[in-house]
Every structure is written in C-alpha cells, then in structure tokens.
Length: 233
Image (tube, rainbow, N blue to C red; front, side, top):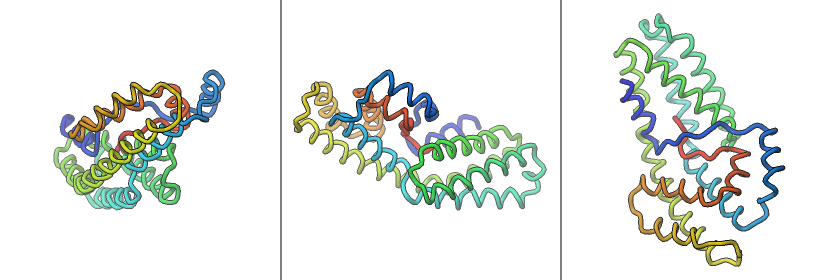
C-alpha cells in the first residue's frame, strides 16, 4: 500500500524535493549578501516563468474541486463506523478542517504561496494517516475518493503544462532576440534541446534545468516563495 500511495502522490505531475518558503529574515539576509538582481531582463524572464509555472500547477478551479473532494472525505468519515472508531479519526478531521480553511482563504487569494505550501503539508498528513491505518477497506475507501478527484485534475494540469511549454519557448526566444548583453549560449543550447523534446515528463525535467541556469535570479525569487513543480494534492 505504501507504494500505491506514493504513486498516487506523484500522479498529478513530477514531484521534486524542495524546502518550505524562507522567512522574512532569511529573505533579507539573502538580498543583503547577494545584491539586487531584480533589475535585469534576465530576472524579468525568470520571474515570468515562475509566475506562469505557479498558475499552471494551481489552476483556478483546483480549490473548488479540492474542497468538494475533502468535504466528501469528511462526510464519509462522519458516517463510517470503522473510521470513526479508528485511531486516525481525530487527527484526520483536524487536517481535513485545516485544508478546508486554507482552501477557503485561497479561493479569494489564489496565488498565496505560503498558504499553498500549508495546504500541501496538511494534505500530505491526510495521505500519511490513511497510509498508516491497518484497515485495507478504509485505505481503499479513501483511494477511491482521491482518484475521483485527482484523475480529471491530472488531465487538466497536463493540458496547462502543454500551454506553459509553448509560452516558455516563445518567451525564451524573445529574450534571446533582445538587447540584454548577458551570456546567452547556455540558454540557446537549452532552448534547442527543449524545442526538440516531445516527451511530457522530460520537458518537465528540462524546466527544472532551465531554472538552474539562473542561480542568482532564482535565489532572489525562492526567497519570496520556493518554486513549485506540483500542487501536492
């Protein structure tokens, strides 16, 4: 079951190991040591990629669909005697309520990075609780509800990513054609490789590779909100 839940956790899109958003103190220290890199065409390019990637990973309707899914799990938990008597019940309801509260806040503030990270964490706790429960019946019950939620969302996010790839290619080409005098050879090599790649997952990896070409700009952006390659739901 551990393997099954791991696969489900990866189902929406490629997962990467990233840290939580930095504190304001850490952000200030980073900028102090690094200097201001936010006044260049390079920074504008990477910032646009960050913003477009976040919108790709968190489509507008994901919060409503996630709310419907979690309310369904909560209702099921309230009426299922076995789950109600289980050792995970109280913690489960707490994390579901935390998710629902965050989803309500995100519905009016959809690009709030810290709340998105909190939602990822809370939903991971729900997944971990069902992974730990002894009853295979309860695990199957949750997996069924999770799949009903995540399967159509997976398709939607894949479509969003395909649009993101097209936009990214265009933006990078426009940057290369621009007047910025920064070294561009590595970006040209990357774009050629990206445009020739047709595999969806390999393109996701190339997006990570692209962001790695901008270490200073990326650090400045990560200080505000760590880049997100998946929504963790």
